[in-house]
Image 1 (tube, rainbow, N blue to C red):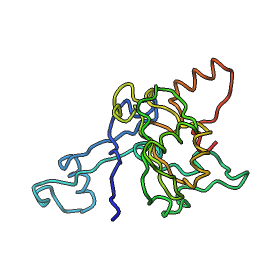
Image 2: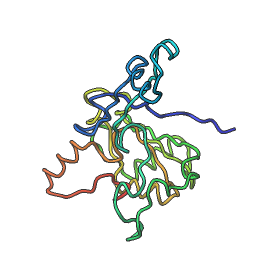
Image 3: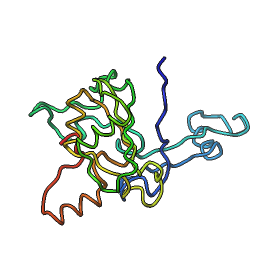
Length: 208
């Protein structure tokens, strides 16, 4: 029988899970704080009429679609896909793509900023004894996973390069997962590579 494993992380107020200016902001409103607001909906009702004088506990969230555990649609990466076709948006991602066997690639031993190659993906699949099948959901475990919410999270982990990504998609992978902030090497390493080589790169290699 299929076993479901929840890998999601809850949204929270943290300075270190996203680059500056992109983090979610959550305001927690208590039962006491919302009681007066509720009374405005019901003229003639007083706080004494509310059970225990309490309102509702509510969270007010300001977030982007890249906060927390999420699925990026092709449209996130670029306006086109497949050689010029309009990129599909998140509501157009088939749900059947999102349910399948999980295949964990353990790259925790690789240094931060390393860009994984197709040969390294193949070697890891050989190590775990798995022949990648269409519909498999590849889950990449990096050194960033245990640092989520810590001050070095954004600079930890590896990147899945274009070569490695094409290796996976050529074998039928449509959905993948990673415990780092993005599919590419951390932004600090991308910046360093550009400075050293003068090259230009596309963010989020899977869509490039």
